Length: 375
Image 1 (cartoon, rainbow, N blue to C red):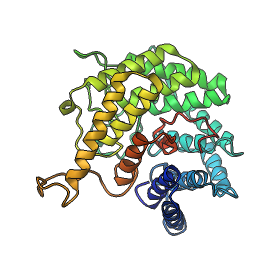
Image 2 (cartoon, rainbow, N blue to C red):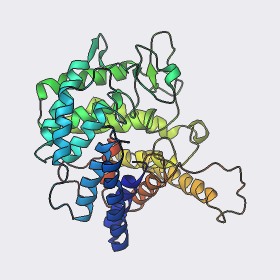
Image 3 (tube, rainbow, N blue to C red):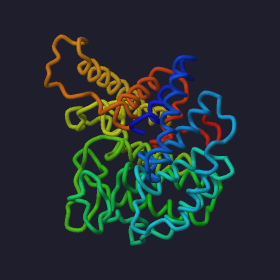
């Protein structure tokens, strides 16, 4: 989603919000560019960097623009269902590269005919890989992980983030449960995962917080505020799960995490850019979404603050916009894409300034829309 597919989604959302024909044309052109990649480059099944993400963009752009017509993703659904029957044991389970990402794609496809089989395949894989201890249910992070922090990705590590860990599995399972699929399998996994997550919060002077990971011999520690890791992303994921299955205690825990994150001094948040993943636009969007689910005034204030901070970062990064800018000013985003780039920043700002449902945040697993009725 760092290329043409992400730009297509951004343009399509703007076209829907603003009734902008030029944006719609741009979306369709970028979408065809992304589809061309399918025939010219070898791609993995990664939701964020593979053919699954392009297929998601095809489906979403069609729904946003009202041009869906004949289903173009039926073959993708069938291929994923076959893949899930023999999914490699050491393959990642996370949202960015692995099983959870395939699940996010299938949720967005609901109620298309192939969606249920994909969802059931993902659930079966999670059931097979689940580990149980006295705290609940968890999933190991595989040694094959190739992330930037591989040096601390130790055998026996359990990742607690949304991007790469169990925090994303929780809203996925909750949404599958809401759809009425495999509830006898899903609910024990979901309940156990939430118990495990909450059992491994780290106590701080301001209250419990979520570490990035838990591993033998490595003391857990607080992390920055972000979607990928940290309290805001986990709070949104847990709150969405609570709403989907009707668990007020989970909602209370999630709201507490969000309020403490909102009260965190900005210079302690670790924000260095404007992107969705770990930047100011991501925080603005998360606090906006959580406010919509809780009506907590402090969260609305936090959303407004991070919107303003995003505008400051974007203005400082634009040559000629700020006379005080220096050549040493860091870029506000990385490239044009959704997760870390300009398209994601634009979508977060658009969501903050309109009442149109931001269905694109399916990719972050924070969408509150009803499956099958997002567009």
